[in-house]
Length: 140
Length: 140
DNA sequence: CGGTATCCACATTGATACTG
DNA sequence: CAGTATCAATGTGGATACCG
View 1: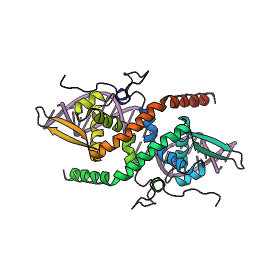
View 2: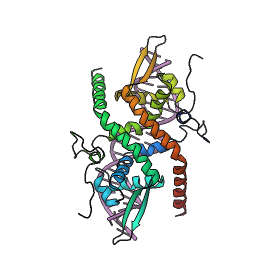
View 3: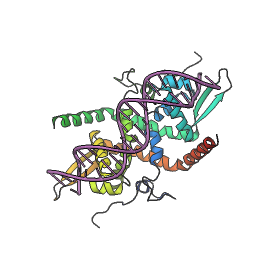
View 4: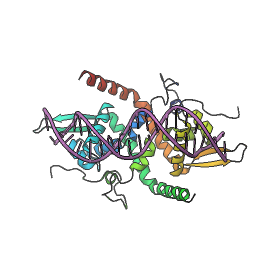
């Protein structure tokens, strides 16, 4: 046994035991949650809601720089589907729609905050590393 | 001022002030770091390296379930480019290649661990929410 | 105001085959 | 063993136009 390594599916390695998680199934399900973090706009929209509290569609459209109307809709639907935000139609005229974080959604924002802070802290190092890499590649 | 909201670019909202960050530039640069978290394999490969220490190409290929040879190569190059991992050619025959986390890479894994734990903790809730959503949609 | 619908360009990924 | 090259499929996001 010279070559010891955890020969398991990723998720079993990550969380000690995952009940009902078939080892056969590739990636085993954590990815589809990580995907929500990974897509272009979810994190930015979520953090807007954390920082500013409940927000209307148009407000989000203005405050999330660069997002299109379509992608805001798509992003909000995905977050809503996952139960991370709620959608409330206000009884105004014309009707307005307000989005808020759920408890689950809010619990995620704490980690996202760390992640964003990490990115801010290390962005100089990372940019340097990328420059060095790209340099050594173009020379090659 | 009845409609108060932070009318700023996302990154300015996230980290109080981002020196040298043009508000004009969409998303302003944190996204390209978040992208590394968001792609399909980076997190899983990184966590393998955290859990098992330095690892060879073939070992990673076996322990990251479902990854192809090509995508492992691509993922490792990206992580290397960002300075999150190092690549060491061992003086063996045939030559072997070992990948390890850098200090920066390791600092990221702590947050990733939280994220993965969060996903594991909330996966039931999220799956339920998704089922309810999909149900109410198909009924529509 | 808060969306949908359609179309399209581009990036990401996977399968397969080949290599030093 | 540790890759690279090529190609095809799929997904993601943006532009635009229209709607209740």
